[in-house]
Figure 1: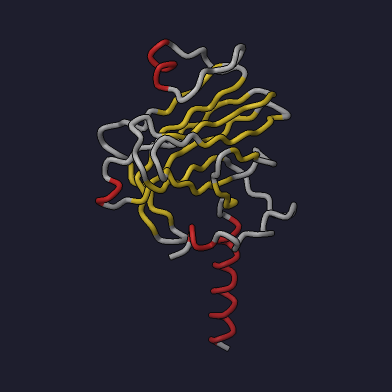
Figure 2: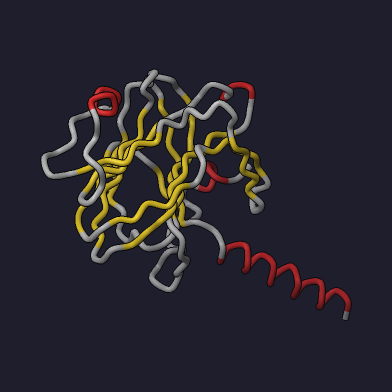
Length: 190
């Protein structure tokens, strides 16, 4: 009887852990986000340091969502700080300093939110499912309007290394989110 109860508790905890997880993805060149209203985490690696990854998404309605850049907390990553910019309608027009840092020109009529990821004291994020520590750029919620957006991820100092870019607030797994979840498991598991 105790084994059955323990088995049920373990299965329940595993289910709850998956229900709270972000959907996994991999950044390679340009990636389209099919549902920007749910939580995502994209694994990426700057191999040469000069890459610019682009996430494209279309908002069908206004929606505020948190964004965060994460790198593994290790001595090798102590100075690794990839940046990201959200480009789209309703965001502030970039000043000259920001324009000079961005990896490409902001299209006419679009604004930008730029995350420098340069705070002197880095926030630490403990991921409870995989039990890993990350340095975080800090989570910030950005209100997005209806329209097309791009998120650019790059390193202004041409640093190399692995990172995770996450955003979103809601979980919804009834639309096929589990399909392919284990394809890139090596990027997320020990």
